[in-house]
Image (cartoon, rainbow, N blue to C red):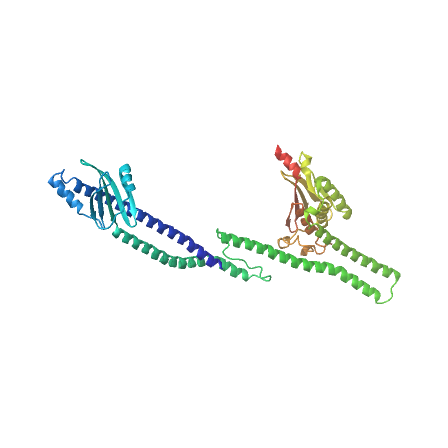
Length: 465
């Protein structure tokens, strides 16, 4: 069943229930009012009959004539009976039969007035005090006119209910169609989006309702998918180039060397060049393996509490070994008084790789003789490492791709590298629930900021105070 049909049936069901309850309430209270009103009229007839029959010899001629006039204003199918205290019948008038049990007479004596029904006939019994003694007057009648009106009301309510249901079903169907029109539009727009059309977006995402929120969420997902597809395309393109270059060089040199006999020195030169290209391939392979290692589940990696300043010194030493001419200005002026705030929970080997990669990038892209500034600090909940260089910088259109493996900006193609360092660093930092951000300006330099949460135990202890 479609949502439109479900909404239509639910809409109709709710209104049907409301109409049924409304009709029942109207019918019930109308019937109750009719019954109470007619009991009062019968009660009045009982007193009129008693006054006319029992007080005819006690009142004036004018009062007797007035009682007689009221007495002859009979009700439909009226029947009146007057009984003595001993239960004997004193007077009876009217059409039909009224079964009076002794228990009824006793009830009238005790309660002074009794109301009850026999089928459609309503009966009122009263205890009437007279100078000759107390009498029991039973008056009954059938409210034929009001019962016919009540029957007509029932028919009107039933017909009105059925007619209303037809209108409600039509209105519900139209309402459901109109309510689902935005969803239908979203579905039609989504069906047009494919892997080659990820630039398309859903319209009507600027409102404040739930469908607009859904469209906004879907558009954000499309943004992530588009970026992921673009990153994948860039990764494949750059990875193919990076892997093909040393392989092509190796194959070319080996083919040239085998074209004719060579001197020993020539063979040594070819082997040395081939070894260098093989080392480049090994570095690429190691980088890919490290990215894979940094992408695994945190539960599979051994974590411990580490002093971040100690990791920074170790990374500094390794960076100097790889780049002996690099210059670093390490700034510890903003360190907290409490050294425990520099403790992070992580894997020392992976974090060391991340910090070394950032320092190496600063060293590679800084002009010769220029210092790279390394600043370590701690805020309330995080340890912050900033590495700033004065290199060539990164263009804004390239900045969004710096975390794509093998991507290299056009202005650094002449600098040795494979485009693995920053993607690997990002994976490691995210694995440790941290963040990495880059602020760069062309020909001015780049600032890389690493943020890692302080050790959970330490934060909890601080919060306890």
